[in-house]
Image (cartoon, rainbow, N blue to C red; front, side):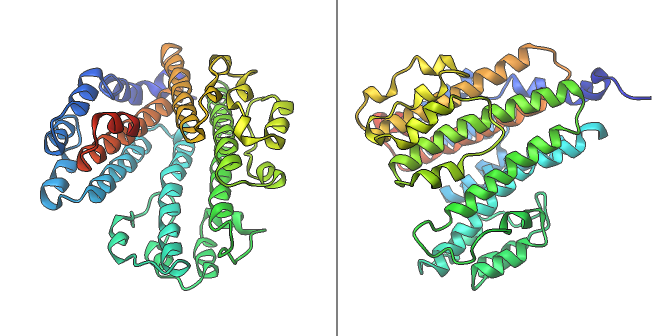
Length: 356
């Protein structure tokens, strides 16, 4: 007999909703921000479910190893969900593992790039790469030690990522560097999510498509802002990086954005149709484009947060609870990492706030 949504999600929901109430609570964030130094901050983190972070810090005092421990904690959260999910949605949840794996893959190839293309010493940094299986069987050490990018392509040809190389050049030593490779990985992730959504039930499929479309929109706008100004990409290059599968953003505004003067752009206008709460904020009043980009990233993050909050307030027995939980854990891990780094480098209050 086919399971109902209630029976399908009752167990995982009970586990996740209890934990969601504790993620980034006001008392935790305040204690972390106002900790007198990194040692006190680490102790606060340990008392909130991150005991491994305290152990790493006490044994090494290495902030990069602390950040790596946080990344491992994030991966473990994905794996725990996969182990506790009913069969009907387990395949979809396994696709979610592509996200941390792609982050790890980007970091690994960047490490290789720094060594082989830029000639930088990397031996000490290889210890900050996750080398166990996440989703695919990837030989991480062989990627780091590869002589050429063609060797990396051969290693990844035995994984789900083989498809991204169908029309890619092997030589990445030019001006664009790893740009095409990394955007191809992002495209693969969102396409995989959309494909996986088609195999879910009606309500779950709708939630995933809406969330994915929102993420695609926000990622596209973020890229348009950054790559127009910082990378000076040409129109065709900008069009090529845009991800498919978003909501119906105003194409005329996108065209004008791409063709316009980047110093006079107002990115919030791009969201006028689907995200009116952002379109009311004129971030281009600030002439410092870096500050504009930082503010815009914050606005995007808040949009995601509001969207997921509305999911939690609705019908509880859907895939939405799983997606919200992973989103919130990711936010918490990034927040903890930022605070600990700020404490480690002893940033002044104003710089510390800006850093967060």
